Length: 457
Image (cartoon, rainbow, N blue to C red; front, side, top):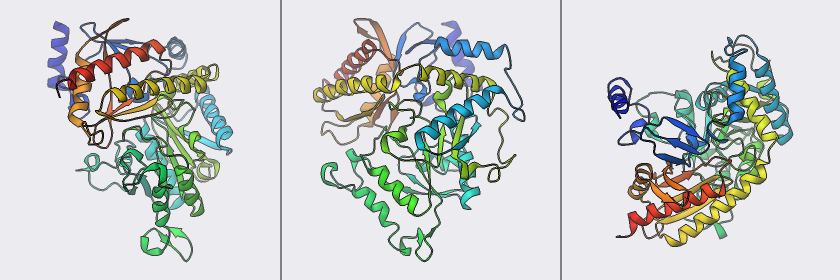
């Protein structure tokens, strides 16, 4: 306890509060982790259902990664990025071959140290190839908080006060069927939202297109195949395919941000695979190293990233392609290639989604549940089942973090994440190795918390 008090004091005196730590009141310290669990300084055990925003897809302290980490530390732990490690070449080839097999196009890989930094690198590629950085992005988009990535992130709050960004985004409504921005119903809308996007190309007076030569002032469309921070929203079947058809017709690049949804979070290696689209550029990060090393990157087709288009010195990071991160990335490929995550994640996701739908029947405050693989959403509303209820959502998260709930397997707290346009969505990203018992315990805990918070209302 004395150690924890000292830590609280030192944090209050010397740590910037510009990050998200102080979203929690009081702030939350943890001291250890394993599998799907975190342990605090009072030895309370937490079942983690956000896994560092889908970074730790394969569990805390996974022995496979510990072995890879220890092996690399003993051989080549650091290397100036001017030089080449075996690990960089092997990881690049693994990603490149995977994308070539999936999307039918040869490409190359470029590494950086974080998802937002790789979004910035993708903007450089777009600019080099297209001549400008004017892009489409979705309402609800979150692509990071560097100056470049902030320009593509739809929340003005993240851009406010930082001046010019060098890129300009035209934000398009995401196909958010539960809260359709056009007031339509999915069962009979005939993808009205996709038609509204196509309408931008009807004439020169929609501002996008010069109809005489079909040139556009927009170079790329940045998408999240499943929207992440926006609330784990899954687009309806056919929508992204229609968008991709328009982009191809007008030579607009498709950039897929797979930072949260890559590496089997949705049940496939890349979330794009669910929607039959072929990206020109794909950005990845987080779970490539199971959250153990800040390594990210992008894959781009050969015509965009060939050495004549992207020559030496086009961009640089001292710790991009660091040997430890690349070794951990190789371990991820070894793990997924020896496992059956496509089948397992799909089955687990269907089970958890069915349990959440049963919970929805019990609690009127649950307005919507949906999921793809083990990326699931629980939208918390008022009793009308539609009006966003941010207050109750915050209470659920706070109660889960501060209250131990008894289950047949012991007492647990929960680590949850909140997203959504109205900050009223529980975005669930459990360990991809999560067990049925852990999912059942989660349902038990969340059920009791919601019951306790709503029983007198």
